[in-house]
Image 1 (cartoon, helix red, strand yellow):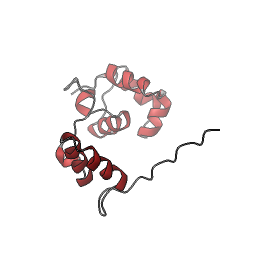
Image 2 (cartoon, one colour):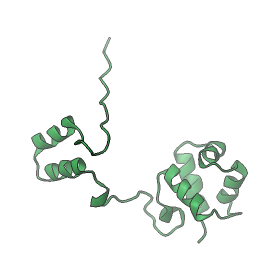
Image 3 (cartoon, rainbow, N blue to C red):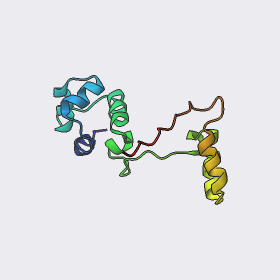
Image 4 (tube, rainbow, N blue to C red):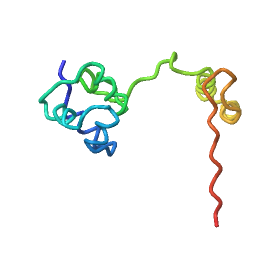
Length: 122
């Protein structure tokens, strides 16, 4: 199946990558990436996957199988804390949701992200 070159080019420019920058990130030559963007060549499935990851879209979007560029999350993609947070939010349990956010991931879940301190005014 042929790559939608217009979608590749549009998403690359939307994210602010030059042809050379994206090619470097994909570990391919910029001339080859240019061929993909000008419908002169089709990438292998491995390269389509790398392009999709780098451009934060689905491979289905790049191949024209879907008009939705953003991957959908399923329940299986969520950590236990993310699932708990979502359930608290849906139930309107704001206090519980805030506790989940401030306590952070449970041991064994995804690594904790240290919140940034607000910049001092002055």
